[in-house]
Image 1 (tube, rainbow, N blue to C red):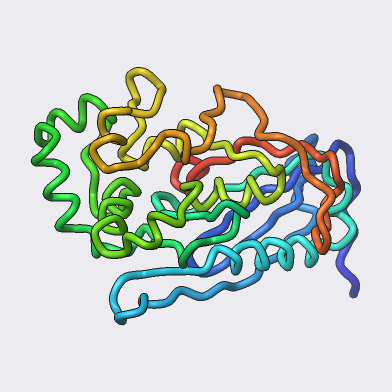
Image 2 (cartoon, one colour):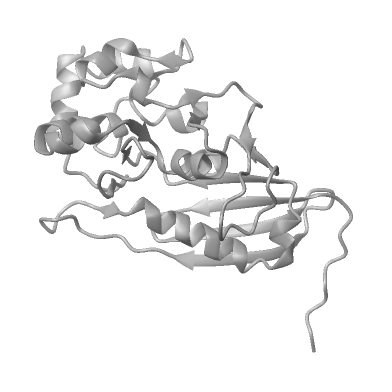
Length: 250
């Protein structure tokens, strides 16, 4: 027996989860909450050039996003809006053309443990970090990964023109605009929860210009609209929400 075709009662919206191992997309009827289509595509994670660490090519995430959306059939192109949740803390470094400088350092890459310990000590200890950023950085946090990259791959740092989180990278590919949200920004280690801004002292300490970071969106603001891109089964002009980290989305 053929599966029943859902009766659409309201506008369609798409929710995307880009994790360390796959990208999943759900097309949902906004009026009823009914899932009308879904897709999933895998991507791989490597151990880094020396066999340790956890890395992934962001271009894989983009290819997986397009494939997962394509599996949703015509419903994807009829969606009025899309929002992406992504694995938190990952460090994505982009060159001036917007392409990855190197594979992304993922949240479960803990090579930056020595840098984490040093940063906590150099900037006042755990209590001081908690008061200024809302949390004490772990080796998963982006600020520790950037510190590791500066020490171990200075040529990659010199080539970096933009620093993004995984969900920021995909949202920017859709819209052409570099943005982030407060939720995912709170897991970087360089965003000040009290002021709602980037902490310039922390950025200066780790040698990262705020000009390389995405624009922080206020609550409820959209990131932009979908561009007309080849191989992307979304309607140009569809609204793109700010998205967030996977934990916040959950």
